[in-house]
Length: 206
Image (cartoon, rainbow, N blue to C red; front, top):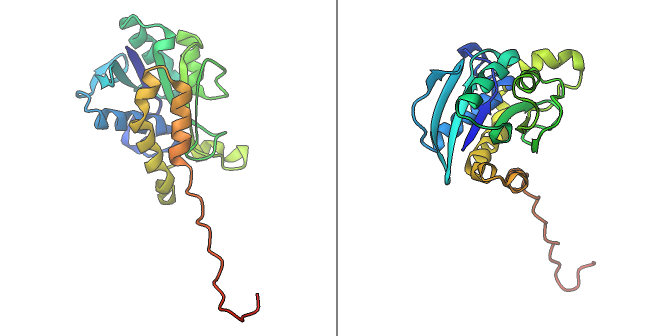
């Protein structure tokens, strides 16, 4: 059994923000794997279903990002899970767009959603860092995460989310390294085709 948490802020005005890519990922998981309807519980929205052989609960905390741990802690305790059964998907400034890292434990890296979860359940849960890129100046970070993905971002965001959903069974099966490698493989840009050397006719200078 797994509790898979997507981080974000509730409300339509935040729906397409970079900070909400965790919500986007769990929405896609719910849709593709035909989970049941979302229900209001644990200060969040939760749905249950199956990914491969594993029973999975998907959770979107509705507390706003900085209090995400309240919702996660309630749900984890209700289902009598341990932190290592919890998987959190969240935005990551320090990864290039469309790159992913999966890791159990570690620091919050300044992410307020993770900071809150650490406070409520400890650090021994799984984190899936979803790269959104960095604006290049720390003074621009707040506006960057709390603004919509650009139209041009759809060229990497859509296949990125598709790959996560298609191979998430590896993650729920405990194969985090395989999951990470698989995403890296299927989302890498195609190699440029090699151009054949031009043919020369007999007698032409080479």
